[in-house]
Image (cartoon, rainbow, N blue to C red):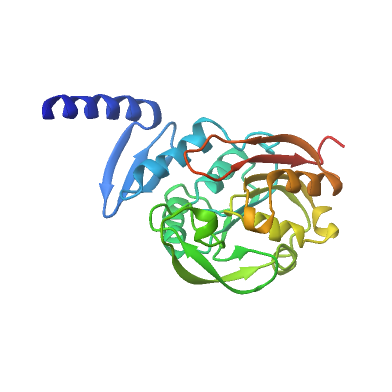
Length: 267
């Protein structure tokens, strides 16, 4: 039985490796993955399957390709930047004179992203250790020890049964962020911030939306706040955005999340 399990694991790993990366090597607590072309990425050994899934979604399934400014000189904002995978996708697919802002409040993710940017010579990415929220202040994030892409501003009631540790982080409103970094125009705003998308966007002035062409959001329904993807879609539609995509993803957890992409490019 043990031999059969070992054989099955090797076969599974073979096909997984063949699909996603050419070479995998250990460096400290990280894996260094050699993917297609000259793309090389760091991923956590402790969260390898989770990181690999994010890499697959971004680089192979091209999750953020809809309305993305391919080959253009663009300004791109990556909210909930995690380990830098989307920012690197943007770096590789936009003109090299583009400006990319990477925002991530959790230092563990931030440090790995910094290694990834250095490894891929991403000189046009500005790193910012902040989270976007309704206003600029200090706040509490609930730290998901099981998955580094799951840290959230919302409590256990919204997040399942596992106990989450708390951590204080710095928050900034979208309006203050545009002002602080003198952003006149944003071609593509990506948001994956585990429920913070609602208060962040609902409290943003119309003048900021006038500067943003496309918003691509992974939304998370928050029942206690009466937040839903539909309300978010209706809100952005009233701000002049055309809804390109709005659907829910499959999940094994008893909570809804999905994908919303809106744009003004078709106007």
